[in-house]
Structure formats: structure tokens, C-alpha cells
Amino acid sequence: MADVIVLGAGMVGVTSALALQARGRSVLLIDRREPGRETSYGNAGIIQAEAVEPYAMPRDLATLFQIALNRDNSVRYSLRAVPGVAASLARYFWHSAPNRHRAISAAYSKLAERATTDHAPLIAAAGADNQIKREGFRQAYRSEAAFDAAWTEAERLQRDYGVGARRISGPDLAAAEPVLMRPLAGAVHWTDSWTSSNPGGLVTAYAELFERRGGTIATGDAMSLRPDGKGWRVETTDGPVSAQAAVVALGPWSPDLLGPFGYRIHMVKKRGYHAHYACEPSLNLPLMDVANGAVLSPMKDGLRIATGAELTAMGAPSAPRQLAVAETAVRELLPLGNRVEDTPWHGTRPCLPDMLPLVGEAPRHPGLWMNFGHGHQGFTLGPTTAALLADAMDGAEDRLARMLAPARLSSA
Image (spheres, rainbow, N blue to C red):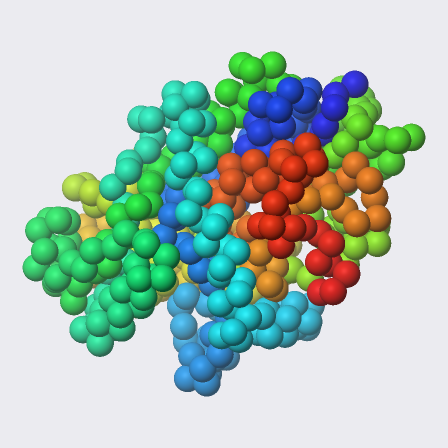
């Protein structure tokens, strides 16, 4: 019998298993698929140390009007999905008010500031240095006005949080990325962030490290979780398994599992798409084309174009309109070749209305723990919230951990 069952083998689940294992607990990691094959696989591959403030919902009328008309390629929505997500969006809008967002960011920034430090020992131990660059990434702007506004914001983040950033002129950007085929106004170079050429592969490397250290990975149905005496039980392909504690690290599927236990978790589920393209030569560093809501990341499989957010139902058919718009825009910038895959990938980001992940023990179920709701930053923050979870399970919570604790569900 294991001490802990961790449900979900994405970045958050795998690093939770590693953190608990490092505290001397025997851990069983369970997923329906191989590690790192869901949202952790499909992101832009950036460990975003610069992301010290979570993405707030726009509140100015001009931006909301563009979104309402589906004219902003960073955010699109399906009318059919709106009724099901309206209550969560209302809460998201409320928490996005400037004063509340500042308070949330005070906690969130403490997570982001630890991101690379917490990834570093895992990258080294997993032998994954060949997947990592420590040179940051760039956000590029097509207009001088947008570039100037972005740099003003970057200066504020430098001043308030000590974030590393450089202003790069259009000519300097062209020199840094000779592959660019047209001039741009300039870019903000976020220098503290790290990038991966294979984000799913990094999660796999962490999972293999977990196994080398004595951990067990099993295929099973997380939704079969049930109380079992003083512990918890899950069905796997090798039969039922039990443990004293269970950790729910299922990202956007977590509310479905916890609903039958009486926890109503509001979540804004943001779908993202990506596809890989032949591109030779390619970019030296990932580049965000801000005007078109796309991140262009050189990956082992080709140049990955990753989109912004689509608000749609989890099971809705693939409708990669954002990707099509982004591809057309990118062809103006880069010598983009054919698409590598036949079908674009899509996955879902689990965004909670107050923009902070849930980390800690379920209020009414001893031994049932949560670690999910990282929004756009599960790949970035997995090791950090995993460490906070392990602290909490050892009875060593701090002020930050209390702000993330599921006890706040009662006041949501």
C-alpha cells in the first residue's frame, strides 16, 4: 500500500509525486495516458519567470467589444459554451478588478519568482539540460504604439518585482533573428525565463526520474477514486490500489472528479491549439506575435505555433480558427513550410476565477489533497506548487500556502 496516490501525470502531477517522494513517502502516480501527453505537452515550452501577474480578464470596453465580436485572435469563444461558463466568467471579471488583481498578484508573484529555481534541480537530475535554453523569450510588436505601451508595462514589472527585461528595437530584433522577413517595431526580451524544445519530453524525463528513484506509475481511471476506510482507493488496469492519501492533479478534469464529493469548483476552461511547421532556418528564441495572439517556438518537431484562448466546451469538436489566423500572420514573418502533422493538437488550460491554483487538503475530506488550477502556467509552476503541497502534507504551511488552500472554496 502506497502512502500517496497522485492522480494526473502532467507537469503538476509528476512534480507533486517527485516532491512527496523526496520527503520519504511512497508514491503511486496514476493517469489514463503516458506522462506529459495532455496540456503539459501542448504549451509553448516556456518556464515563465516573468509571469509575476496572472492574466486578468479585460475590463475596458474597447477590448471587451472586440472579444464579443470574436475579432481578437488572442481570445475567441463559442456561443454554445457561454451559458455553462457564465458564472465562472462573472467571478473572473470580479477578481480582475485592479485592487483585487494587485492583491492576487502579490501572492502569485511569489510563485513565479521561484519557478526556475524549483525546476533547476529536477532538470539536472533528469538529465534534461539538452532540452533547455536559459536565454529568455521575446514578445514582438508590429506597431510603435503597441511596443511603447508594452515597454511601459515591462518597466513597471521591473520596478515592482525585479523582473528581467530588455527593450529591443526593430533593427536589433532583425539582427537577433535574421530569419524574420519583414521589419517589426520592436520586442520586449524577458531575460529571466527558460524555454524547452520539448515540453512533453521534459515531463517524461521528470517521470522517468520519479521511477528511477523508486516510484511507480500505473494506468488507471482517476474518476474511480473512492474513500477506502481511512484512505483512498482507485481502479487501475492491474486492479484496485489504495493509499492513505490522494492528490488530485487533473487540471481541467479536477472539478469533474471533485463534484460528487460536494465541491463545486468554478473554472474557466481555456482551450489552446498548436501545430508544427517546417521552418529552415528557424528562430533562435521563442517569439510571441502579440498582435495575433500566437507564440512561435522552435521545437524538436519543427516550429510550433501555439494559440491564445478559446472558450468552448471540453468535448467540443476541434475548430482551430485561431491557428489559421495565426498561421497566415506568421507566413508574413517567417519562411514557414508545410505543416508537420495532419491534425492540429488542442488541450485545455484550467483557470480558476481568482487566478490562484488550489493547493492543499480538501476542507471536508481528510487525506484528499488538491493541486490544480494553474491556468496558463502549469508547466511553469508545477515544481513550485508541488513543494508547497509537500510542505502542507508535512504540516509546515506558510502564509503563501494558506492563500492557495482549498479552504477558500467556502467563500468563492
